Image (cartoon, rainbow, N blue to C red; front, side, top):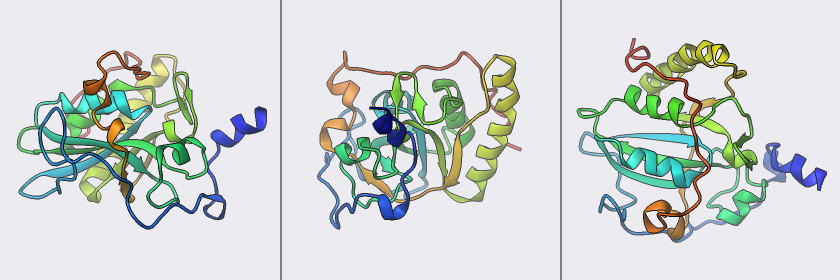
Length: 217
């Protein structure tokens, strides 16, 4: 039992990871709330962002409600196994994080506005867990596209760390990395809480506010 718990909260090395598969796993065709193609590319002035905040069911709902967000999808990123399944990710042997891919219109909502949702929507000081959910797939992560997103992500982290400390929380454990390969999760995970309104949602913030605009410089 204790070995399994230890394994689930430690990142596997590449040579320890499950082999995965060459082809993507099946997923949904369209977003059931926003009615857009789920695999819509970041084109026509749209921009892309990826967030890891714990169980991706509740996180996706946070973002599809944001004005200016035009598409969302849940999936896996940050690990070693190509095209993983949910069961493989939950085994702790892929290294992947449960994440949400967000497409947004920067004329209507800024990346800094999305960072506010990120910092206020979960506890980024918990390491390999979020609330009662424990494992490498529940870690806090910002996966950035380009230097502008990286600068904003790092500036926001530096801004938020003393705010969390003043509120009695520990060190921010959020990883900030260049966006890795994103693998769409299975059909039944997409917009899960729209399909199952009474479904589980283990995501909750800390009450520490993130001031919009402080990360824009």
